[in-house]
Length: 213
Image (cartoon, rainbow, N blue to C red):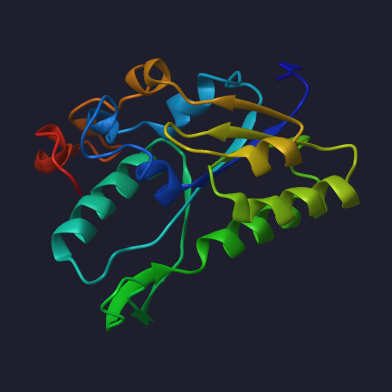
């Protein structure tokens, strides 16, 4: 990946894809109190980074999850990260196994579209020379291809989260790297985070105990 100091970089972070790449068990689970700005700076100089946009959605059916999520988002905003919030939808599905029973579940439906729209919008506004997606989701491929087709002077790079298979993304982008354990370890928020108003924001206790969200 080029480190041209004149090239403006904007990050587009698929929050749920990144979060779920850090499994409950294993070497990565303790890194959920992640400083997204510091992570970006592991790969690109701070002088180049124009924006960092974090795309996510609240799991409204669980108060404890929402509380942890709001804490995390507040910590990110304190670091100058922009946040775009999508929505979960309740869907009825049929079990593919032998039982064939129907059941209700929740699916996040807006993040992919929100990222693709913002990727194109900021290209139209000429707000970056290099777009960096943090995702392992192949649904991002059409958006990448659209930017490359319409704006051939712009670069689209991908940082692939741990435990993600991203062959289609790798083929679609100009350059890629994989986020390693060392990058996560070097990109943890302090605990507590001191907010600009002087208040402290503590890492959720469940995350400190390395349990799942």
